[in-house]
Length: 502
Image (cartoon, rainbow, N blue to C red):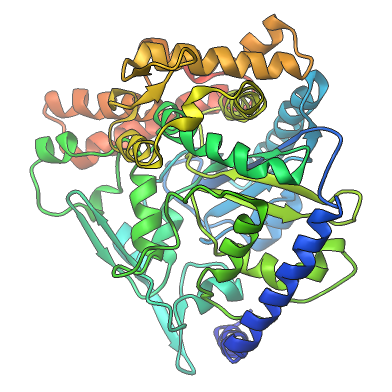
């Protein structure tokens, strides 16, 4: 799509009557709630699914590179925000032995085929929390901020041609469009800086829609401990750092800068923020109305087809910018497949597929076990759960977090927190028919991280610290770490585990 055509599409989208969209969403909410009360979103069993984002690098230099549109179509992946971003997702499967195995096999088959095809073009797909090496001959700051103006519309030069993404830079919504992190300052005219980060997003479908609020409450309580296990974004591209000494940058690095990047780019600096740790919801009605009442960034009139959930197309559109770190989802192509689920969004992309599926399994196991047993951590104050989340983003497994154990006692002991968490994840998987050995195989990659106090972010941080201690300049140390990360991943992404690296 040419810049002129894209600008015209953006102007058409922004010309949509915002008040009409609000009224339509309000009406659809009543229809959606009626369908929920009728049981349309209830299911006989829990289902799981996983979204996986990656970025592309030049296989010869490890520098970021753009993915040609034709190649993207050949590998069957979807374009994400940046021209270097790609995404795939699994087919939802029942939460049982065969369903989880099918999730892993589908990811392995899809990614192995994609890697083979992209390597013929000297492109490697990387699963990582944040990229650090800009394209050859370019600097990170320019790559993230380059924009042109076409007919009065600001167009990001390195963004995909999604109208929604470009419209965000031309609407009245006061997104920060900046990065505010320790020793990093970046201002842009578009949302392109968000393309620094990539993620995995496990989905857990509840059997009964009315039970979603209880599961959602527990999802918020486990968010901090799971994020601490999965941190994978301690560094920025070196060219983005302010003029600060290396030891200060190392000391003040957050283990998951991904959290701060997403929030500072897309949130209103003076408002509550669309990207945030969400409140508890007391009823399923609260969950639906929270989406409807969330500020609309791009008031588009979405296309409607023959899907069951096209009755709620406006709500689905609004949900696309309902960027809570944990969020409810209500959709389904047909009435029989309509579902209510929880999307868990704090996790950066992981070093291997096995690690990604481990998070999917552990989250699902916890969602099965904790509500059924009425685990006392559900009584943990929301503010404490929120602080756990913030501490985990900063410090990973070195964070001090608060947990209420199964005996009702409060603890900040890391070993005790994870012993309780993994025990209930195992219990939840066994409740879905997995044997003890099968459940432990899914838990093992994350249990090893907790036991060793070693996350992908800590591995990266140690690599850079060791190089700097040897006299290597910080920028070269970060790029050296990145090269080592990509080398290790090339051998383990499809069939290995992160614990194989250490």
